[in-house]
Length: 102
Image (cartoon, rainbow, N blue to C red; front, side):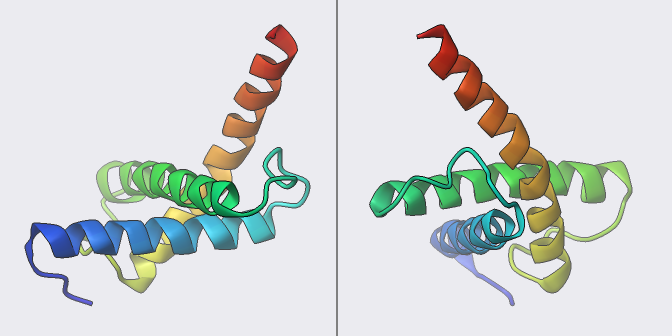
């Protein structure tokens, strides 16, 4: 899916982050963010998905040389989901650790 222009790239990145965040949170049972609901839950999904998409991009495209620079394609979605599955436990650990310190 070709997305033109800077605004289109931003929309594509948000869309990719949202899809990756939602799918990864469904696949990851009992994450630290499970009790959230409403707009906060949606924002957490987008944030985790965007972070995961960056991790997936670094691992697969920069690290292994697999993939391309398209914002939304099947390989990009898959690497973003895998990246988000890596980010969720780390973010959950940090969240639990900061709650204990308070």
